[in-house]
Image 1 (cartoon, one colour):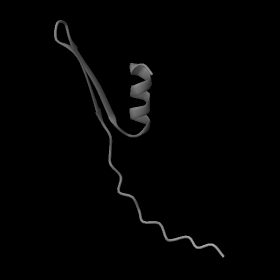
Image 2: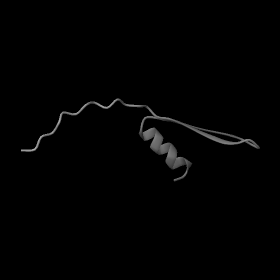
Image 3: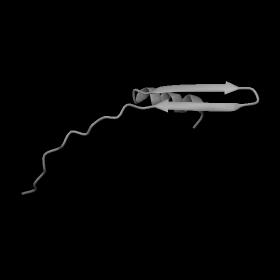
Image 4: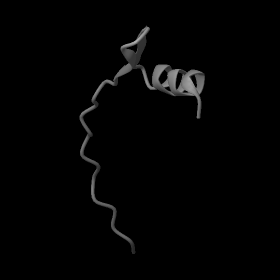
Length: 47
């Protein structure tokens, strides 16, 4: 998985993807993903 693949997946999930690089200082990758609250599902009963 390369950087472009990572970015594609993050954007598909509605997130933000940033890469910052400075010579002699390295590279920083930041990813922010939205959290979704799960909706309780009704119990399923089998008959």
